[in-house]
Amino acid sequence: MNHHLPAVLKRLYTGRGWTLATAESYTGGLLGGLITGRPGSSEFYLGGVIAYSDRIKNELLSVGEDTLEGKGAVSPETARAMARGVRDKFRSTIGAAVTGIAGPGGGNPGKPVGLVYVAVAGPVGERVERYLFSGSRREIRLQAVREALRLLVAAAGPGYEQSR
Image (tube, rainbow, N blue to C red; front, top):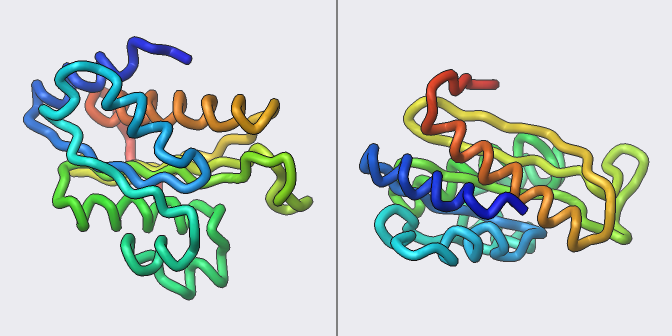
């Protein structure tokens, strides 16, 4: 794990006056935990939602039932909707979401173990990235959180591009 990323995130977001909220599924609060593990995180981090079940994704984050049923909980559409939903719910500058399959079970040929989507929604646009990680459940979760932190840092830096 790259432990300097939360410190970089704090510097970038507080320097811009930005706030952050997170929505996590299978990472179970690991992203929020790493962010709040640094002193001063309350200057920009508002909080997060652990939306493990589809019902919570729908009720708390406004992920549409049609998205959950049609695309699935692990999809770019759901990740994007989670990021938008947490941003709206917390009224933060940036919303970030992580959804995926950590294993060892739960995967299938179309959505294998290690498939992860990370989404960021903010004033400079929205971005969803797809990853396919390998390793243990713990390793997959840590890799996803590392990439989420990288994407959050990139969102505040030059050269951030929107994806649709």
